[in-house]
Image (cartoon, helix red, strand yellow):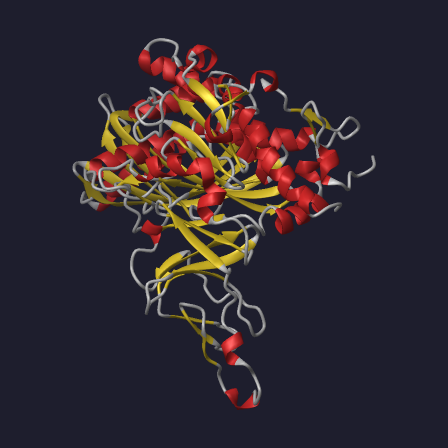
Length: 399
Length: 167
């Protein structure tokens, strides 16, 4: 097989998609430069960084970063978690509060805002430009409805422009509890041996639900004494719809996003949302997809608790979340098994390496603000994602 | 009988408790899950914490915190033939050690053990080690019922794959 070297050739007019998007190391490397280097990337929710000095560690694409709220000025910053001296990660904890980060290798110390504060035994550096050796910052940080984003690019669309039609949905999410939401409950960490995009695509894929989650539907049927209505709704309820929001973002609405719900479980959002490239919302959770390699991914599932609600209410949200999600859930592991790992198995057959992503393409119709609207179980969200992905990937030319 | 009984009775009690844990492990390893479920009291809880001793299920996400109803649903799901994450089913071997009676909790025996659970599935062998606690209450007609089981895995804060088999 000859590898495709021009990203434009990975897609056909009739929405066949080349399988190497999931398997190629060259495409993975290009993604880190083109998909994760330019756009805004989600890194934190403000509730994780309430007080000056608070920090968390996460990844922007594959790069380890520290997100901190300045101990002196309360400003949010995103910095590479790498000592400027000889490269050791300076912060080990997932979350905490600190005025300084001290590299354990040779004792270089940084303020939590990133400035280099101290070099040990520094008489050996007569001409070092200390002011240029702070932790490397991502040049832009922005907050939208409590969600913190950063970009490696000095210039480009503003965060508001980038989020575009996804913004109103983030606002609705931010108002789920009486006093908003908080990400204080920790996260489920899932690891699987397949490409990161499979998790993003699977976040809005109503086509799969009745198949992959048949065993969960059996549990629901046992619980309520009849077949659960979700599949009928997906197939026939016209207020259930998928929307390409532009810029790679997409949503599935279970009726009006301001008033509707999915007839579902406690804490569930009235929609599933994908914010390009790797932030997703489903059920009561924020899902942060962390690429590791072309064929390895970590996913963090953060239940969103309701600020201002009782501990009992929030505990019920957690138990509901755990029922489906996490490594022991009654739903999520079936996605890992089928939609990620069995796909990875199948992708080793490369003789005819093309996928079909055209479901419902003929009935996509224009919506408001340049959106495209389709049926609930159509592959509108997949095409929305790959329109954004293709735009980012083709800008850089051939691989 | 309580944990404060005289020495010979305590030894007999410890032997009975250990035999009960081995019996539970045998049912799990042979996937006789309906039978396994009968070991649990109606008000039982089955808990696989995420994080260390400071984790609080009221405010922190857990791997599993089931009541008896959801535990039954798990068995139903795994047994129904459509749970792909258990197709094929995990083969497990429970190795149990360090069994001791740690005390009494509200009329139940508080039994501590360590367990090494080896899981084989789809060409992979994985091992999960953890500290396990059982709260055991007398069963009508003899033996015990499980009021609570807690499985505190050593790797419960790491990224995990597939924990859909029962522990």
